[in-house]
Length: 119
Image (cartoon, rainbow, N blue to C red; front, side):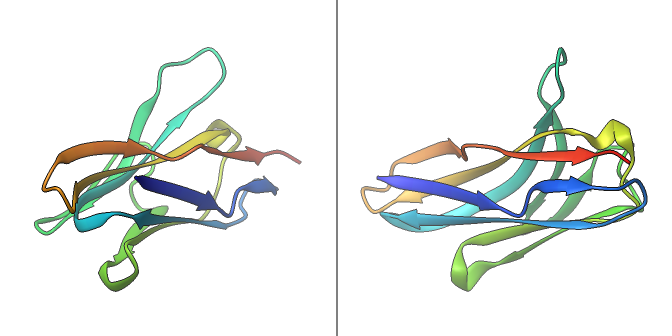
C-alpha cells in the first residue's frame, strides 16, 4: 500500500504565500514523477506543476510565482506558492508515479488540501 499525505493548505490574503508538502509512504521501491494539480469549484482538475529527473514543468498561470521541489530521500514534494491571487483558490492535489516493492508501476493521488486566497 502506498499513501500520499498532503499538508500546508489554508486561508491566505492576496499577495501572500503558502507552502504545500506531500509525503509518500508505504511499500515504495522508487518514486518517479511527482506533481501538484488543482481543482477550483466548477472547473476541471488542472496541472499546476510537476517534477521529474529531467526537470520541472509549470502551468503558465503560475510561472514565476510557484516553485516545485522534492526531497528524494523523504519521497516528499513541495510547492512554494508566492504572490497568491484569488484565482489560485482551489483544492490542491498531490500526484506521484510510484514503483512499489512488487515492481508494479502506478499513479497515486493525495486526499487534497484546500487553498483559499481571500481578503
